[in-house]
Length: 70
Image 1 (cartoon, rainbow, N blue to C red):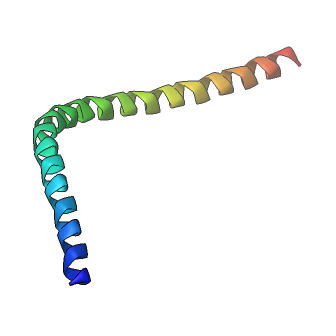
Image 2 (cartoon, rainbow, N blue to C red; image 1 turned 45 degrees about the vertical axis):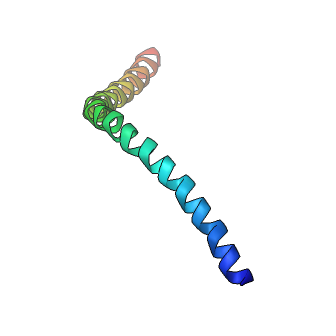
């Protein structure tokens, strides 16, 4: 009986989680928006990679300037 009561408590947890699931389904529509934005983010990350290349080139430029000073 005690086991059954604990399981009933778990069931109540499950019902609360079902309410959370409904929230999650509403959020899933927002997630689709986020996934579209994630594609934009991937573009931004590629641009960031280009930026890193630019920063490396700037480091090379600094090396060139140091070499020029000597």
